[in-house]
Image (cartoon, rainbow, N blue to C red; front, side, top):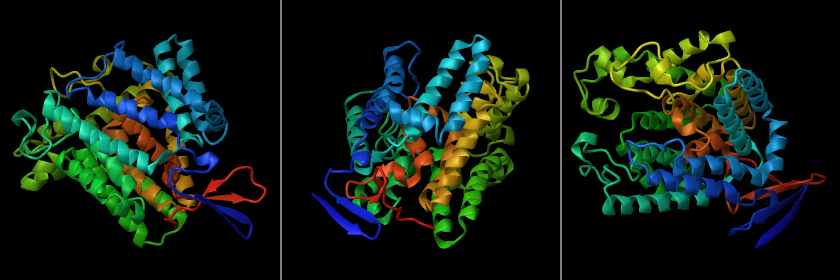
Length: 439
């Protein structure tokens, strides 16, 4: 049922059930994209990744390439509008590596810009209930996979995981990182408003359970950061400019702190809870062993070194990190170098990659200016994920898609069936009502 109420200068349209305004209709292509990619992730074990040229690989890349065509006009409008920095990134880096004959780098860059422009467009919205039902279905499927197959080596409850993986860790995905990161996204979205938390308390509790007991330390740190930022921004009535700078500096600062935290961790490892949460239940480690466990600070330094030594600071294009690394951290291992997307982009595409980062900062400024406290509170945690689990921000990854929706749209990325839509007199299309969280 739809109710139309005329107020001074505007028409307010209230919808319930599944009815939505024309510009806020369900993005079925985006829902399909996330569902299919999550189901493929459910079929991949902890040690596997889709091999290039495999059936799963072509499904992932094919969906990422084709589904944005369902919103081609909105995508192109976005590229020539608010996402101009993405377009410039694609054109400058693409032209350089095309002239160098590196077609693989050009194609990878094209897919990154193409999918992110789709996510950034006006059609880049997804329903809260859609995400909740996807999560419920995945937990149920994951339980079945754990019960009926040997694909998932993790337990669903603490104490049921095989010893070599850490008996107290839990996961409903065969890959524990997918469990922790998707559950973190669900926690962020369901705490966006008090109404969302009250509407889905069991799902919120399940998501918190999997974030905490998966013991994926990046997800735990991101959760703590989000909670602290949300509390701080809620109690401190700061200016919008101040909110922007706090979110940006915390996002940068947490990664700087982690890069220089070896000696703090060396002291804190004596506490059992700290050791379990952040050192995989190990203690008595030397500073070198702690550095090896952290891994990311070493990776950042390697990739920044590759960037500053690249021809004309334009990056090395598509390269094998194991062959390009300056030194080995763990002899005998073959790191992929995809765990930190921002420094990886610098090493691959050079200076133009700064435009990608400026675009993210511009979207943070937009969220702060519009008074979206929730989006600003999420920003540092998502930047942390980019620098710790950057491989999830591959254009064909469903979890990265959800986090990018939050980054580029803030609260407006999540649609509610009962959400009000406001149409200004003389305007061509309706717009969403203001967020519940205004500064």
